[in-house]
Amino acid sequence: MFDIIVIGAGPAGSAAATCAARQGHKVALLDKAKFPRNKLCGGLFTERSRTYYTEIFGQEFDLSHAVTRTDFAFWHQGRELAVLRDVPPLHLTMRLDLDARLFQHALHAGAQDFTGRPIAQITDNSVIFRDGETLTAAILIGADGVNSIIARHLFGSPFDKNTIGFGLEIEAPNGGRPDGNQPLRIDLGAANWGYGWSFPKCQSTTIGIGGLHAENPDMKARFSAYLSTLGIDAEQVRVKGHYLPFGAFRKTPGRGHILLAGDAAGLVDPITGEGIAFAMKSGQLAAQAACDALKSDQPDMAITRYQSALTDLHRNLRIARRLRRIIFAPRWQKIFVTTFRRSGTVRLQYMRLLAGEIEYPELARSVLARLPHYILNIFRRSP
Image (tube, rainbow, N blue to C red; front, side, top):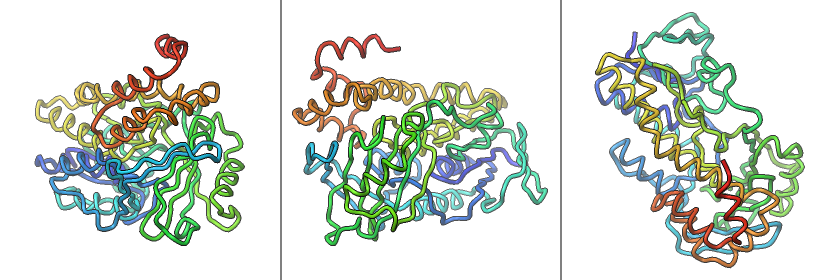
């Protein structure tokens, strides 16, 4: 018998378990995998992520296993748009190391370890493992990713197939290059309603492509073409694929005493693809809502408290989703690319967004002020 069961021990789940355990609650932390474990992800750890990490875990983020870059290259259809120098630092991590570190924070805070145990069944107040053992709790927090079994239990499906994204990714030794000093790279238009990325790490470079699944029936062919532009033979590398939340967040991330956080709630930036920062923050907010609901002896009010705490984050994601139409829609991308190439202000604001120095309303104003008037009217009329 626990106060809170957290399903999923990635950034969202570990943040939730840490926050709840530190407030004296009996917390079970579950995951089907044993840590450390790999996960498909670019591993971008921004200054926004560092801020949230310090706030949630009470210490500075150790950068010894990360690669830090202050140069960012943007490309479009094989042409370099711009290289941004001396931008706010961007840190490239391996999820193998990052998630294991966050998981250990949760255990040190007092969460009990139930990882490496597959789940057979979920009920409104219990989790039943395949070996028959049952855990029960007043509140459940689902932080178990895009294929969340908690979301499936609540809504019948973990995501909407019409709005979900999909990504393909490889780990290339040295990025296929001898120098290993290349900047971070984003390729706009590498996928429909998405982009490609090349992120240098300590011993490899994570290269991927992602976009809306429904708009990319030829994603494998697009990825092969993208790898070719980087000088990499697609036949010689192991490709991983995974669904990606892409801005289609759940307006009500749970029900009563069952909450969803991170990817399970669709809390991923639909433009930058950043998910780690929002995962940690939503895990913290879910845990606080759960603790407050338990304190008032009203566990079913947890969702009301949590949804209220997410108001600002949801607002920013709504604006980002609208802005995405201008940045990624094939109909308007040429106009945006021209604006991005010419406007140093837009580029700077994009990097400040990643650093957590500004939010989407300010970025939207910078972009829209520099686009043709008829595009501005379209944005204002969008729902």
